[in-house]
Image (tube, rainbow, N blue to C red):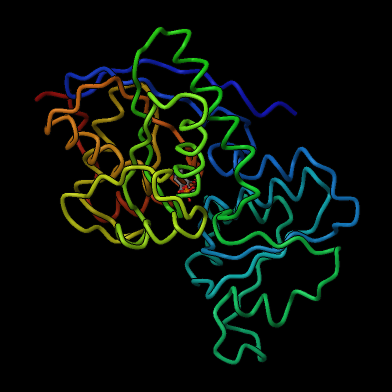
Length: 313
Ligand SMILES: *Cc1c(COP(=O)(O)O)cnc(C)c1O
C-alpha cells in the first residue's frame, strides 16, 4: 500500500492564495495525519502482535484510524474510553460507527469493577499490558517516536514540491492536537530545508500544553514549531459560532475541511495574514472528515443552517 504523494492544490480565500496539501486524500480508509503517524506500523512486520491497544475519545479520528490499521494488519483493536455517552451507543455515527464496522472492541472504563480511579492510560499500563509481545500499545493520538518516520516522509514530499515550484521560502501551517505532526515536520525541515518553517496553533489544551507536548518528544527547543496564539481561548470539542462560520466560508474553496481542528487553524492563519505574514503558505489538510458526520448535525442543531456566502473582506 502506498501512503504518499498526495496532491497540492491552490485555493484562494480572504484575498490570499494558499497551497493545500491534500493529505485527506491519502487513502480512502486510512487518511490524514493518523495514517502518516501510523505508517510505521503499517509498513513494518510485527509477527508476534495479535492485539493493538489504544485509548482516547470515542469520537476521535485516531479511534477510526487504529481500527483501520488493525483491520489491515489482521489484529484485534482494544480501545479504552473513559465513558461512552448513551447518545452515541444509541445512534452510532462518525468515527465511532466506522470503527465498530471495522471490528473495533471499544471498552467503556466507567463499567469495569477494577478501575480504582485510574485514568485510561493508567488502567492500561496497570491492568492490561502484560509485557507480552502479542500486545502493541499506542499512546493517545499516536504521540510517540513511531510517528516520526511517516511524518518525515511527509516533510520530504513537501520539500520536493517546494523545489519543483521554485519557491524560495515556505510556511507550512497546521492545527495541532498532541503536536506530534507539527514537531516531526519541523524537525525534518530543519535538516533538509531550513527555509521551510512550521507554524501551528494549539487546538487541544492551550499553548502551554502544546509546548509541554513538544518537549516530551524533543528536548531541543530550536527544533520546535512556532505556536501562533489564538485570539481567544476555545475549548476542544465545544461548538463555536466562529468555527461554524469559518467552515462555511471555506466551502467556497471547493475543499471540505473538518470541524474540530481546521476552523481554529484557519482563524489563526487569517490572523497571521492580518498581521502581515506574506511568505507563501501551505496548509496541511490532515483528514478527519468522517468526524463531520457527527459534528455537522450538532452544529446544525445548535446554530441552524448558515446561508451560503460569498467570501468578502
Ligand atoms: C489528530 C488530528 C490532528 C492533530 O494532530 P497532532 O499530531 O496530534 O497534533 C489535527 N487534525 C486532524 C484532522 C486530526 O485527526
